[in-house]
Image (cartoon, rainbow, N blue to C red; front, side, top):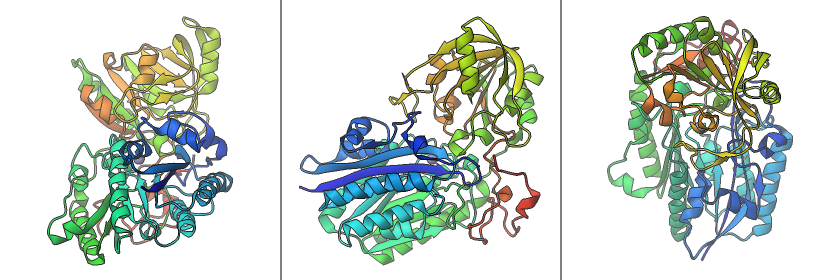
Length: 510
Ligand SMILES: [Zn+2]
C-alpha cells in the first residue's frame, strides 16, 4: 500500500517567438484539458490520452494516488514567471500538504523554458526533491521533443519518453512509468543514472518515427549483462527552438548500477551518432512544393498533403500565416484545402454573415513574421460550426476539443478551414465537424510538421514538407541561440562545418 503523488506541467517552448505563455494560456481549453487541480485532475485525465491517463490506468489496486495539479500549454513561447510560479507553486504546495508520500510521478514535457529558468523542468524537480527528501522515488515521463538536462536526469529516479512521433503512445508511456514506480517502490532509488547528448541538432521535420533512422533509434534494445540492470531508458529527439544549453537529441538511462547506466547510454548514443547523415528529408520552398503537388496529384484519386511546417502551432507557429494559401491561389490549384488557419475575427465575420453569404475579408497574416500578410479577398461561407467536439485521430482520439467558432471560407477552388483557437492540424475531426472530407481534395495543406502523418499519410498520394514564412524556423543554423553549447552541429550531416553567423539568416522572431 503506497501513496503516490501525481501531477503534470507541460509546455514546449519556442524561445524565438515574441509570444509569452501566461497563466490564461494554461487555463484555456483548446485541444487538451485546461489547468486542473486536486480531484479534477483525476476527472479530466482518467480515460484521456495523456501519459498521466495511462499511469492512472496502471496503478495497483492496493496503492492510492494523490492528485496535485495538471496543466498542458501545448507549444508556445516562453512561460511567464507568473504562470510558472502559480502552477509550480500550487503543485509543490499540494505535494507538501500531502506528505508523507511513498513515490511521485510527474507527466512533464521536457522542453519548457521559463523567462527565468531555461531548464524549467530541472527547476521544478529541484523543488519537488527538496520537498520529498532523499529517499522517495520520483519518476517522470517526457515528450519525444524533450531536451534532456543533466539536472533532470540526476533529480529523478526513472525517466520515460514517448517513443513515437506522431505521438500515439502517450498513455502507453504513462503505463511504462507506472511499472517503473512499482519497481522502485520494491527496491528503492537506483544508484545509476547517465545522460548522453548527440553532437548535432535535429529539426522536428527530421524526427518522424514512422521512418528510418528514428524508427530504429526508438526501437534500440540493450544487450549483454547491463540490460538486466535497467530501470528506465529514454531517447528524446529534442526541440531545437528551445534555447537551452542541453538542446538536442539525447538518451538517459537509469539503472541499478552506475556502470550499467554508463555502458548503455554510451552504446545508444553511438548508435544515433552513426546514423547522423540519414536523418535529413527534403524541404521545398512553398511555390515549388505546390508545383510538385500539382504534378504528383495529376490523375491520382488521393490528395497530396503539404506540411506547412514553419507555421506549425506545435512548434510555436501562430497558425495564421498565408504563404502556402497564396501559392495555392496563384497557382489556381484546386480543389485544395487549407487548415487550420487561426483567425477569430474572420470566423466571427463568417458566423455573422451565415452560410452561403459572400464576405470581404482580410484573412490571417496578422502576427508576422516579415513576408506574411493577410489575404484580402471575397470569400464564400461554405460551412459554420461552434462548440466542443471529439477528436478522432490516433494522437488525441477521444479527447474533447473546442476551437471556438469555425468556418469554411472558399476563394476560387481553395477551401480554408478557419478556427478561433490556435491548434495544430493533426486530426481529421475539425474538418469532419465542418462536413468536409479531406480525401476528396487534390491538395491538402496542413499547419503541422509531423503529427498529421499518423492519420493523413495513409490516405495521401504523397506528403511534402514546404517552407513559407512562419514563426518556426526548421533550420537551426538561423536561430540566434544564447545558451546552446557552441560545439553542437546545427544540422545532422554538417560534419566539420561551423555554425554561420545568425545575423546572416532569416529572422525567426514572429
Ligand atoms: Zn512533442
